[in-house]
Length: 141
Image (tube, rainbow, N blue to C red):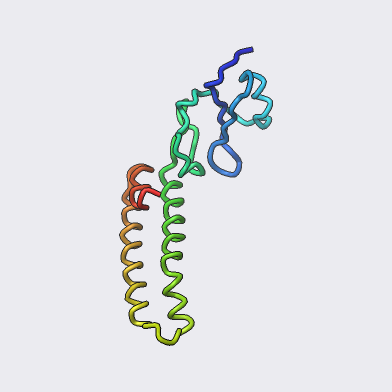
């Protein structure tokens, strides 16, 4: 048996992304946790991204974990939509409830500014060549 605490066992998860097993003892003993019949690889811990932002978009590459760019973009768009919804919330309430003393025209102008901002973010995500560019488009989140 080999004890390699810097080794990791990776396999493609049924739910998307890559499952990572961190052996606490020998790698051979940890192999029991890989589902039967599922292909796996034993890699160095350094071959696994430290940034988990797009973990659901991980795929097994040539001896390492890589990102599926289309999946990263889909995740980025989900994050963009969630941020836009949060930014809209206070203005949506003013418009929907027609709160007395609140300026609906001002609220709508603010909403348009939010639409414009997130349209630019959408274009940047669509044009991104790698996950770092997607993160930058989202403001580094």
